[in-house]
Image 1 (cartoon, rainbow, N blue to C red):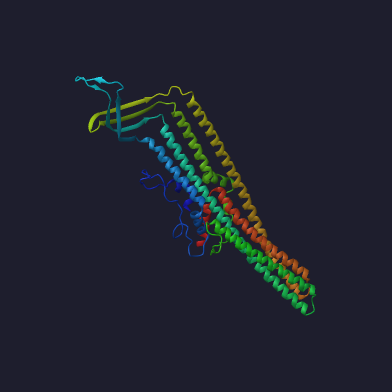
Image 2: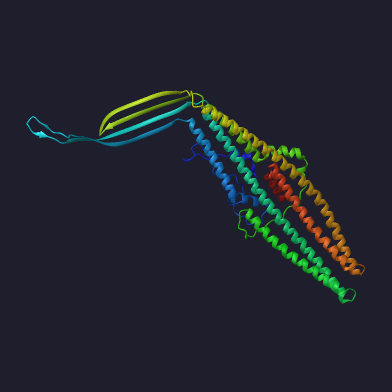
Length: 470
């Protein structure tokens, strides 16, 4: 499942376009489905990997996380913009008028008394082209780019973590539905056994070799088995709706599911808890994201330091002006500007101190994530060990309870056993079957939770798909 591989995610790139000239922003999330468009439901029985693919396409959490990935990729483009010069052009006319007002008159050469005002209206046109390029800034631009790339790595890791969270939700809902269907099958077997016991008690009562109390107890047991089956079928319907919603489908949509594969062995336990914890530190997206945040904090320190270093900027411009339709003047300039920050009220020093403190915070958070991941792996490791041990015990329990129930039914048929013994054996058999279903559900869930804790839930689903294809 390439979606959950950070190496595949890190290799994502977009296609250059008007909005993305560098081709930095990926357009399509790395979701791979078996056939058809992303999110379509295949017209065949659905296996767990099919449901996972549908969920990854349809779940809004995936869309939100993918938008964050695209935003972070755009942030890299924003940071890299400082590597190139900026070019600005401006052009436009300005209409101006000036008036001269005379409050007193004068006598001209002919002896006439003249008074009034005069005015001037003209159009001033200007055109300007300016180029500016920051040649050196003490490493500030490089630090901004490094910080943006670290944030992009964190966003990619968060996206993978979101995808894994969706996968575990689907796996849990799938296992829950499978368990409820197994309980339904077990209850059908219990109902058939209760019906046989009822018929046996009724036959013995009709023959006068059993009391009416035996027949009534058998009817009660049969009715209880029927009620339990009805309740179980309601649980199946609810679990099916929960699985549909987990896959991003309407709760009422019917799902044609392929039979689940048999339980595998405890292969996840073979390497030991320490090896799994080491894998988690390498694979878990939340640990990778936390480390990326530390890298971003390092870049922030470098950027803060660059504020106190000299910078060199190259600039060139050309200005053209005209009055009405007559060219007035043209002026050009070229300059090299060296900026030396001398004193800023210790602003730079405090920014460096703030960036260092933020890095300490990120380091502590990353260590906390690592420790919690180790605890989660160890806890799920123990849970899977316990579930596997319980499964072996419940399988033996079902075998013995079934043999005991068959024996009790045979003894009652032969008239050497009581109906109370038969009811007790029947109840023990039904309870053992329920425990077996629960034990199998616990194993499947514990395996998935351990894979999630390690950060390899996608690989676990892929391995399950391989087993189903064999």
